[in-house]
Structure formats: C-alpha cells, structure tokens
Length: 336
Image (cartoon, rainbow, N blue to C red; front, side, top):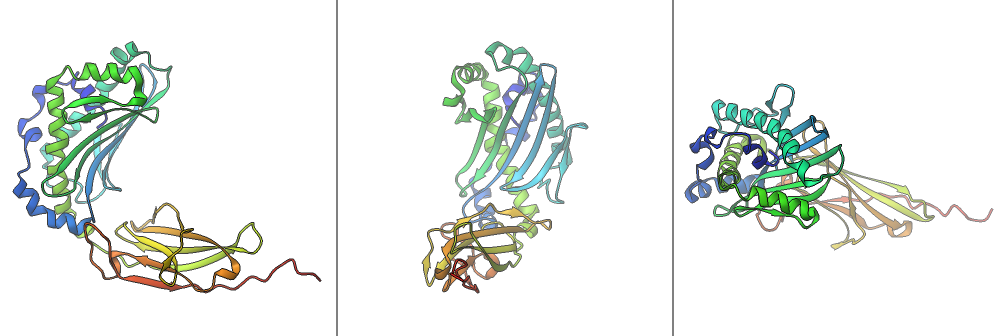
C-alpha cells in the first residue's frame, strides 16, 4: 500500500467508509487478545504491506504487492485482475468479503492514481531519467496491549525517501530537497493524513488481531527440529569448517550456538534462515577452527518445539546438545 496518500489525490475521500477507517481498538480488546499474541511471538508481531513499483516511462508502470504477518507471506496481489491473493485459509482474518472488496477497489484505483501522480507531480521535481523504482513498507506492530504502533516508510531506488510519523509526512535525509518538496505537498492535505493515520493505527491493528485469532492453530503449531553436523577442510591447511545444520523447525525464532562446555564460541557465524517447501525453516551455523581444537565442541539449539515456553523478554528453553564427531585430519605435508 505504498504512498497511499498519493492515491488519495485521485480517489475521493468520501468513498471511504468511516466505520472501516476509524474503528478504534479499545484497550480492553487489546488486553483480551494479548495472551494470544504472547503465544504466537516472543516480543512483538506485525502485519505489513510491501509494494514495489517499477516505472519504465511516464506511461507504463508495473506494481507488485504482498502482505506479511511478520516474515510469513499471507497475501499476494494479482496485478492483471486487480485482486488480492489469499495464500492461507485464514488470510482474511475477521474481515468480511465486503471489506476486502473495498480494499481491492482501493488498491486498483491507488495503483492507477500513483502512475498519474508521477506524470503530473513527480515530473516537476526533477526525478532521475526513467526507468526507476519505488518501494514501500506500511503496516502496524503490536508490542503490548497498550501500544499498537503504525508505520509507513517509502524508498526511492533503494534509499530512504520519506515516512509518516505521528500525523505528518517527514522527509528522509537521503531524500534531499526532492523528498522535502513532496512532504510539503502532502502535508497540505489534512484529510489524507487523517486517513493514513487511521489505516495504520486503527484498521491495521484490528485486522492483525483478527489474523491472530483466525490463524491461531497454524501460528501456534510447533514442529520439532532435526540437527546434524558436518565438517570440511578450509583453504587454510590444518583448519576445519564445522557446520551445524538445523532443519524442519517452526516457528522461525531459534537460537543456535557452537559451545565448548558452557562457553559460547565467539567465532560462530549464522547464515540466513531459509524456508523449506513444507513451510518449516532451515539454518546453518558455522565455526572455523584449528583441526586439533575441534574435539570437545558442541552445537547447542534452543527452540520452542523442544518443550520449553516462550517469554516476551528472554527465550529460555530446553537446550539440545549435539555432540561433535570429527576425525582429526592428519597433516598432509609430512615428509615422505
């Protein structure tokens, strides 16, 4: 839902149902749902929309959109038909078909409006020559029953451009005078700012809580992991790269560390957590050591599927110790 405000310059504010935009979440509702939030995540949870708009010239643009519950994609956008793609049975949360029909109309008109806005407004601010790309991330985050937070950040060609803070558009330092001019223009429209505020601070948290309720069976599931070890020589003679593989775990939060006794090894390096085809996750954690120092090292894994309980502050769960079984590689350069 990138740069919603640009779209509203072409879409009448009167078309927005007040009850849809301005429904405020009472603290009692947030307090009621927050135990569920604690079961799903450790510290916070967010719903956010990502948009990437690629402009080839002033008459052609490609818009891509997706919706995410933290790092789990739950929505897509079919640009040809202008419809939302629901990737899970619970992706609608507790919103009605009527509400989603309205959102689809909003997005369709918005994408058209964004292209027109570029032609009529961006061109006055000396943007670089075509093609170029705009990215944005907008949504909300729940930390506690009393503090739902909305956010909206936009980027131009991968650099921060502007954001919506409190009730105003604020230019990013990287955006320079161009971002300042755009923000000055947007801040003239009080109605637009109020709508963006309500979408990110009221509508989004309400939708997020509905998602947590509708998807609680899947979101609370725990899949027990598998862990195994491997090693290989490095390019430096007499050293080994130890690899701790952890696969098949869900949910995503996990802690993995190479240790000796109870001492964490500072050289431990963690790769990115990657998705498996079945929706679980895979991780590699590496340690480069001298071959003669490999004995006595272990890989320790902490994860909620191992029988512990999540806390919102510290993740203190059952640790599984995987013994390291390594063969000490003989020195290859011995004299014959």
